[in-house]
Length: 213
Figure 1 (spheres, rainbow, N blue to C red):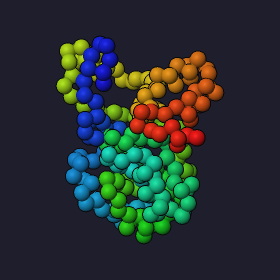
Figure 2 (cartoon, rainbow, N blue to C red):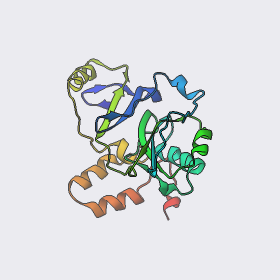
Figure 3 (cartoon, rainbow, N blue to C red):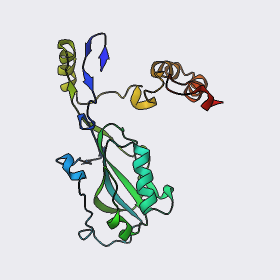
């Protein structure tokens, strides 16, 4: 976090940025400690028998990008990636928990599921697939390190705010190309074609322009 009014270190560690998904009155909560990732076990004995087609569960991950996590789950459990549903993507350098659904799953494969930095828990049968936009919002627990006096003043105001707008930033377009401001301005001006063209063709200093030819 760095602007003209204050500075602080943001996302120094993945656990400095906790994201818990909210769906109605339900919150997908992270574990009490990161030690939960060391030897996670899946116990389906308390799962009720059901004729419903979709099994939902919490997908908890740390320092893992969303699509790598979804790919790992679908490859080990689903016959088709389209059988897995989720309401929104979650950050990579973070500790996150969200609800996913799996169509007609093989319970034995779920019991055997194991993947670094990923936990599946809180299983429940559902009538419908979870889809993009189903979530009500996200609850954030954020640690900012080495905040200066101006940043502390800003944070004191944020602490008393129940909800914040999700502005265009690195969470939306990534930080590799450093063109977030450019894309955001184009979208706000309804210049969608220009925004899409810039998103697809711009490249950062650490990327080769030949990849886009």
